[in-house]
Image 1 (cartoon, each protein chain N blue to C red):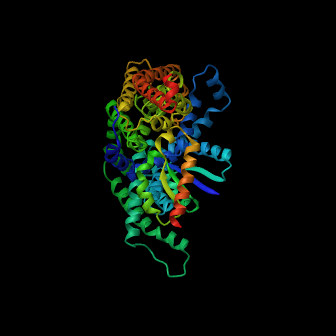
Image 2 (cartoon, rainbow over the protein chains, first blue to last red):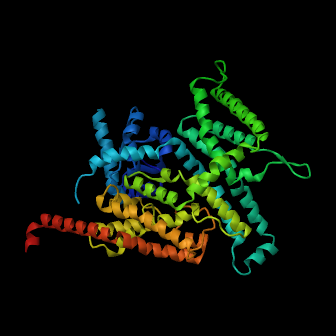
Image 3 (cartoon, helix red, strand yellow):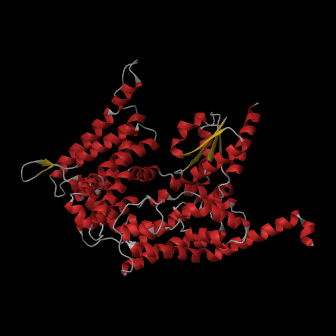
Length: 108
Length: 431
C-alpha cells in the first residue's frame, strides 16, 4: 500500500489529477491511496504519506517544504507541469512509484 | 522562439512566490473565502427577493415569503464584518502557528467593543447594524491582521499566565489567551470611550472615513481594477496562483458589491460599475481569459498534442479552472503566450467597463458568485440577458485574442510530431 497526497493552493485542479491517478492505479492493480489537499493541511498529513506531490503552481515551495519535513519518511517533489496540464494520471503515478523505489534504495 | 526559460524562472518565481505568500494578505483572502456561505447565500437571498418576473413579486409578498429572504440577507451579508473579524483573525493565526480559535474570539470581541451602543427613541439599547455590515469590514480586517500579531508577540516573550506543572496543557492554553484578551479588550475599551467624546464618535467612523471610503473610491476605479487583474495574470504566467494578488482588492470589491446589492434591494440605481461581481467579466475561463484557447484546441487543433489538450481542458475551462491550460500547453513562462495572456485581461476588463459605462451592459447587482459558476449563467443571474450575451461574445473575443498564438503552437507541435514519426519509421516515411 502506497499513500500519495497531491498538494496545491486550493485543490481544484489537483483533485482532477488525483481522480485520474486513482483510475490508473485501479487499472494497473496497484494498491494506492491517493487524495488531493490544499497546502495548509500538509502538516497534519505528512506522517501518513509516502509521497507528497506539489502542483506546479506551488512548486516554488518545494525546497522549503523538503527542509521543513526532512525528518519524515515522505518524499516531497513537484509534478512535471506538462503531465499536470495534460492530467496524465498514469505518468504521474509511475513517477510517484519511482520516487518511492529510489528513496527506499537510498535508505538501504 | 525556442530558448530555455529556466534562468528566467529561477529569478522570477521566488519574487512572485513571495508576493503570493504575504501572510496578512493571504489571511484576508482566506478569511473572506471562509465566509463564502454567508456572502453567497446572503446575496442570492436578495436576488430571490427582488427577481422581476411577472407575478412572482405579488406571489412572494402575498404569501409572506419575502421576509424570509430579507431576514436571511440581513443576518448573513448584513453582519458580514462580524463574521469577517473572526475568520480573518482565525486564518492569520493559523498561518503564523498560534492558537487560531483564541485569536478569532479575541478579534470578534475587540470588534464588538469598538461598536458603539446606541439608544433608540424608546430607550432600548441597540447595536447599530450599519457597522456590523460592509461599512465595518475594514476594522474587521485591521483587527484580523493585528490581533494575531499581538498574540504572537506576547506568546514569544512568554508574557502569559503560567500554570504549575501537572496542569493539563488544554487548561494552560485557555489561560494563555487571557493576557492578550485583557490587553486588547482593555485598549479597545479605552479607545472606544475616548473616541466617543470626539466628533467622529467611534473607531468605526474614523476607519471608515480615513481608510475605507477613500480606498473603496480608489479601488473601484477602472485603473486600479485593471492593474490588479493584469498583475494576477502576470503572477499566474510565472506559474504561481495569483489569487493572493487579487485579494489585495477583495475587501474593496466586497464593499462595493454590498453597496450595489443594498441599492438593488431598495430599488435604487446601482452606484458602482466595478465590484466583486464584475469579476465575471474579467477572466472568462480562468485567469488570463483562456476559454477561447480551450475552444480552439478542442475544435481546430491539427496536432495530436493540441487535440489531446482540447479534450482535457475544455470542461474545467467552462467552470473557470484553467490550470490544465496554463500548465499543459504550457502557457507559463512561454514567450509565445506572454502577449495574449496579459492582453486578455486588459481587453476583457476594458470592453466590459466601456460597455457598462455607455449602458449597453447593465451594472451588476452585486451578487457574490463563486468563480466556478460558468459564464452566461453568472451573467444572467447578476445582470440579466444582456450581461449573458456579452459573456457569450467574450468566448469569441477570447478565441480571437488567442488564435494567432494557438496557430504558432499547433504548427510547432505538428512539425515535431511529424519529425518524431519520421525518425521512428525513417525508411517508410521516405518512401
